[in-house]
Structures are given as C-alpha cells and as structure tokens.
Length: 107
Length: 265
Image (cartoon, rainbow over all chains, first blue to last red; front, side):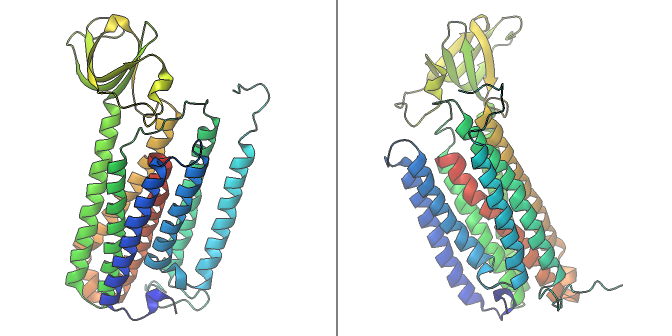
C-alpha cells in the first residue's frame, strides 16, 4: 500500500510538513551561503555543491510530499525510464560540449 | 457511461488511471525541462570567457519565491490530507492558501520581468557602455533620427565585460545619467534577445511560470466549483486533488533547480 492509500492523520501531516519546510529553509540558506562563499577558484566547486544541496531538497519534496518513498512498482518503472533518458540527454549534452561542427566559429 | 478506475485501483497497474496518467505526463515534463536545462548548459559552457553573467538576478526575491512555492506545496498536501479525513472546510482553507501563494509568486516574477525590461544597456559612440534602469526618455527621443535624450539610473563602464559579473565588481553607487541619442550606437533592454543568458532565463522561467498559472487555474477550479463533486463523489474528488497536487509538487521541484542554476551560480 502506498502512503497515499493509507489512512490519514492530519496532525502527523502537519508535523511532517513543518519538518520538510524547516529543512527546505536550511537547504536554501546553505545554497545561498555556498554561492556567496569563496570556495575554490571559479564556479565549478560551488556549482557542484549547490546542485548537490538542490538534489537533497528535491529528494525531500519528491520523497515525502509526493509520497515517492512508498509508491507502486509501476511508478518506479516509469521514473526509472525517465531517469535513464534524462541521464542520456545530459550525457549527450556533456559529450557535445566541445564538439563544434567544421567551419563554425569557436573561441 | 461510467469511466472505469477513477476510484478503484486497476488490478494490473496497482493505481487508479488518473494517477498513472499524471506520472506519465510528469515523465514527459522532466524531458521537456531537461531539454531546456541541456540548452542552458551548452550556452553557459559555450560563452566566451568572462561573458556569462553573475549576480544579474535578485537573490532575495528568488529566495522569497522559493519559500512561497515550498509553502504552497505543503498547503497542497494538507488540502489533500483534509479531503482524506473528509474535512471540506479545511480543504478550502488550505487550497485558498495555495492559490494566494501561487499568485504572490507570479506577482514577484512579473516584478522581476518588469525590472529586466526597464533595464537598459546603452553602447555609446565613444566605446563606453551606459547601464541602468530607465527613468525617462525626452519627448523628442528618436534613436533612428538621433534626436532627444534618455535618462538612466545606473553607471557608465569602459568595457561590456564590467557589466557581466556584478558580484566581482565593487559596488558602485548608481547615479542619474543622461545620454543624447546622437551619442548612442546601440540601445537594448535586458529582454530575451539581449544575450543568451536572458534568452534562456526568460524561456526557463517563462515556461515555469506558465505551469504555475495552469496549475493555479486547475486548483482554483477545484476550490471554487469542487463542492458539487465533493457531495456526490468525495473519493473521486480526493483523487483529483491528489493528481493536481502531484503536478504542483513537480512545479516546485523544477523551481528547486531553477533557483540555484539561474540566481546562485
């Protein structure tokens, strides 16, 4: 049984929401602090850290608010395909980063 | 004719139909936004060194919008939970909060867009750049005929690169600048065609804002006209709220990545 099919207690949802919101506030503050910090040279390390924090934030929303932590197998299957194609898309993007067709301007 | 599996769980999928439908739709949405994020990466890494903007967007407003969307995601969940415990009054309260939070988000976004559309970069004939928010154009201002003047609240810099990284550039007090049309080579606001950053910024946030608007209309419909179905078929109505809630959480998820990517990096 997924979370959305279980009997609901409004009070426990209030507690869950309060915790999720608190963590969202903390992660957002952490992202801002990282962005304005003087970590490393350039943006690479900062971007990696900020995106890692954003993933934690996203996990909370997807896992608890969307009940993804206790969903049906078919939903996971659909999402597994999505993740596969999304990673493929990003992989192609990274692969194409330095590929310029002959005759086009580069710098 | 009765539509099957609006309430009952379909034995082969383990889900009611609308829930499977929304997950398939969200999967396609991931790829839609994924394509745009991919474009963002290519534009960013392809930018000439020092020509990718930093600090162009208002972090405070972005943070407020992040918290507003997080709160609205929570009120959406609570609205669904209220339906589950058969408390329609609380459902109305929580969904009213969601609508108000969404409208505030859109209001702030509109303000940010307006701020960009009245912000001008003016390339002068002497090679310098005037940059700032438009205060006024004289009545006879015509760039083509080179008549009149334009007044900005901003600063003048030697090189366009000085306008790119606003965090690295020491804070300079903006002043009122009046430029004659005869001294202007090119004048352009920070709209989508200004550069690749503003193009992808307006595309990504514009598409996201359209999703917010669409979601708000659906939520408003359930809030305003959902009473009839609640009386006749509360279980089905609750499922509709769950499905619209899943869409709303997805919109929040997209913003969770848009905010750091556009405002913080």
